Amino acid sequence: MLSIARTRLAIPVRTTFLLLNAFGLLVGTFYNDATPDLYPNNSHHKLGWAVTWIVSIQAVLDIVRTLARRTKSSPRPDSIPRSFGSAFPQALHQGLPSDAGLKGAPLPFADDSGHGTARNSMSVRSGSYASDEDGSDSRLLHEEKDQEPERYGRPSLPWNIPLISQILSRRRSLRVHTRLFLAINVLDETINRISLVFGFVAFATGVVTFGGIFRGSSVFNGLAHFIKGGIFFWYGLLTLGRWMGCFGDFGWAWNIRPSKALVGARRAAVPSAEFVESSVIFLYGITNVFLEHLAAWGSAWSAQDLEHVSITIMFFAGGLCGMLVESTRIRDLLNAAMNAMATRSPGLLEAHPSDQWASPRSYRSSMNPLPGLIIVLLGLMMSSHHQDSMTSTMIHAQWGMLLVGFGLARAVTYVMLYIAPPSSIFPSRPPSELIASSCLISGGLIFMASNRDTVAAMERHGVEAMFVFTVTMGLTAFIMAWTMVVVAVKGWATRRRGLRRGAVSLAH
Image 1 (spheres, one colour):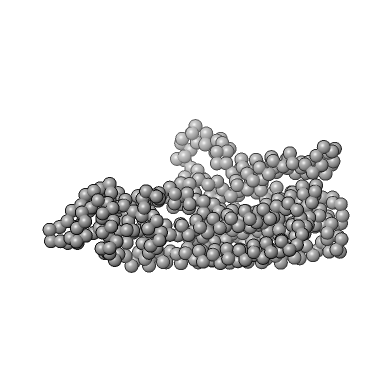
Image 2: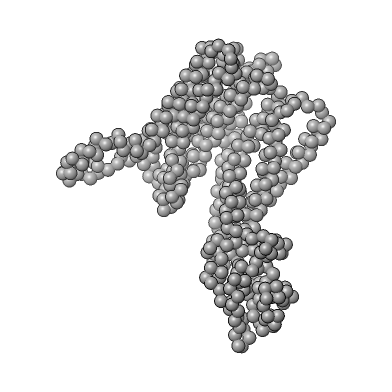
């Protein structure tokens, strides 16, 4: 979150994390050498190294981006100590008169890259040099593009770091280009967003490896429960994020979508959250139609297999219907009869008050109950789904009823928004969404725990189904509290960065 807020505090925090991670890797390496491999060819070991390298690369990118941001604007030459010893060799290198520095004229410093990145420095392409007769500081005749590099996106050099300044000053060995920093920024932002998912997958595979489950053909049942349960878990975190105000610039925080002039054309064109939910449901249904019989490939289809395929068809059709509801073009076609009436009889517009022809207030926000309806139906089906044992049936009923609770809480949200639609760009934070997110997070975790191997281990050790429910509820409350704290820290860092920027602008 500190990296997303683009604060300098992200570097020490990430460095501390890397040091702790390196210590953990060292201890883990010693442990692996001293113990036999009880889970050969497990994916957690490979994924752990991949995540470690990705996070390390992100740390390097964060340092580079921070240095580039700190040197976005070059200081004035009168604030830089001028050294004849450093200016004289540079003058000889660029072909200037060797006595130019003796006349008091400002020479290009060793920090300058030779492209006019420093104000009042000599550009290689310009070649123009003039000195006043009284021996005062001369002004170089540059183009506007060379005089103000920050307006054209040309990065300047970090004056306060001599080593990097010397490296970047060699224009033939390395040329810093704006596109390079743009690519670094995009890559860093992408890793920031997916690093949480990487961490979740690494933790989940670690649990599987530690428990020794999902061996042989059981991997298909385990993957199905972990992937689908993980989707509901992150769906719950996304719902909690919307309540807290995340994605408010997209109009996803139960607020009015900000105008294009306020957030830009790209963010203003992002579809609604309900459209994204419906599209994910649609993609899940259309892909899992062909995967439900994968665990029993080659054998006869059972009634349970047909039940699973019917669920995927419900997801496919329900997601498609939800996307059609969110389409403004479909809505205009459904209103075609009323629009045609006004076109055929222009006098109706004058005979009736203008507010009767205005769009309803409910059009300001999306009220699409279909994603919630699909989740409710899935919960009802799974809560009464036949299982091999009573423990498995009870666990499935637990997360099934939690999904039903999400759907009911989302219905309450839509009722509240229909009565009082959002009227501000600030998040309205309906309280029912807290219940919805809690049901999704806990339901997803219990869904993951309802796999066949975990249930069999619980039965062998005499663990009841209520144990899973109570532990998951406590973990869910902790995850929600921690998420709120982390997002609040991001807000604090963003405000702190804004105050520092304001202080710097006032100082200049």
